[in-house]
Image (cartoon, rainbow, N blue to C red; front, side, top):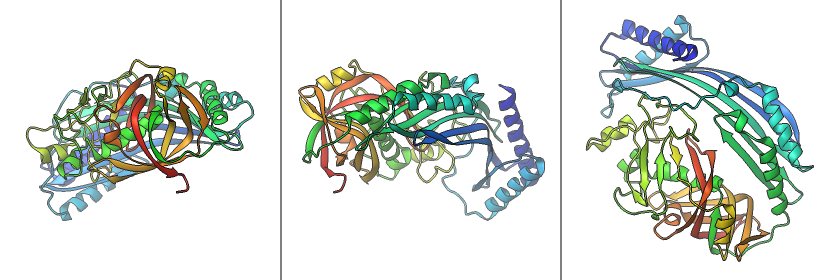
Length: 453
């Protein structure tokens, strides 16, 4: 335990002491304390125009009084007077709340492993460190207009509850996300890691510029079903929908999920696990309920094998279901979120994936993706940042952005995965979910029109 995380745990224990003093020893309470720093360097028209830094000081308290549950949080000072007001507000709300029949109780004492996602240099990074990556990105674009950001985050977290469970952890994260633009196209370069030292601004800038030039002067392509090679950023979008609307315990409980445990719903080449301990991942070793995160093999050789749970969704599922550590602050409405998804790498580099396509489409990224039918995973969205025709195993003409309506589950279904890339990228998805993912060669994707209709 570091000095910083020890300080956070001491704050959590102070809050629990105030709860005991004002609500009695029968009150159930859990406290999350988050400290650290979040900094961002933005650039546009190839110039840095903003540096911002935020000092994190966040306390989240949840209290249950005879099954009546309420929660609230504060950002800022953590003196006893301020913490006392937080406690009073939550206790008052709990006393008038209706009884919560699905209240799962508190996490019991358990060992929390440290995934080791911390880097001292990243935690100590200053604006000049981020500006150096931006300069390298801009220079590598060789005159193309650029825009984007470089960020560094250091989080120190502590958890304690009145059942005697406590946990501490820390994590760092660095990211560079930028675009380069020609008169007729733009494209992106991204790098994300636990360590700022791993973020290569020159490589990302060169990649963005090369892609932008290759995407220039695009032509239209008739709608239809095409083979596709999806870059990791597009694959990460797929995982987000599988997580929220598929392998989420709440979605399963409410009958909105397509998942059938034990069925071969995916191609045998496709596996997926939730694994915060993977060396390429980021994040803490426990969730907002203090539950230790553990490896969960969600899809094994194409077979749907596990559901992700919070304490509440696990209780609803019964049959000895347990939380898998997927509770996030404010996420009760959605269920089990905050996945750390890992898709195992395949054996094909970029050229080999493209070379396996006689006629198809290479897609760099998706956006404006929206679920149309959770039970079939039908999603509508657009391509962006570059889309190209593949002919005879080679990337050819740039295409205008295309609209699609596609079942993500069907796209990964039996017989549909024709190749998996050997290189992976780390992407932030949504709801504290991250994905370490390769490119995928898929048999069919349903493009329904251009970006304008």
